[in-house]
Image 1 (cartoon, helix red, strand yellow):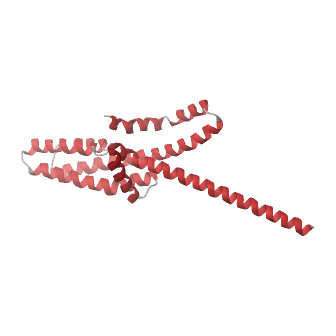
Image 2 (cartoon, rainbow, N blue to C red):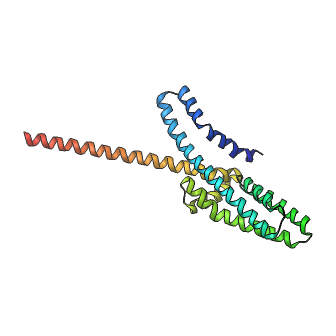
Image 3 (tube, one colour):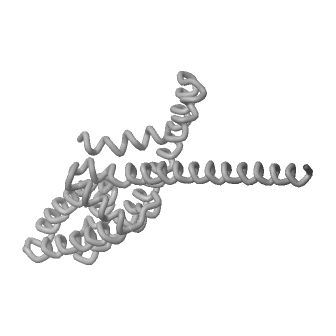
Length: 212
């Protein structure tokens, strides 16, 4: 239950982003507020992209699972497919719940072993597509990560921290990457500004020497 609540809580924090900034503005000094706002803005952008990508993936999975169950011939294909897709916001939860319910529906409906096997094969095929193609391309692109990096981060997050690691691997890595890039760009601008100022001083000194 705690794992299920994590993305829900994160979503509502994101929705209340403006209120969070107003609280920071009220209780922090201007300098601290500007520094905190930079991090919160980056976090908000990443989380917005992450949830946008996840919602697209959920919609695609709803369609794919429904098609797979329709091909097998399960009567409740739409209900089960949509339920599986919606629960996929939590890694493997939709797959686990959906495959169990779908196998039970297939057993009750057809009274044989072959149709449940077909259901398992359909779910396995969609899961492979979701893990190695759909999520890396859509969610990875939404948060600014390469598909290969997305796969590696999900594998590392899942192996080290389990389901919580899989949920936070992409947004946290994307936040760190963006903050590092923003920091690097700021330093580069400062270096360019310093070189420009040095060049102007040198030009001024040369002009003065010429006048003398």
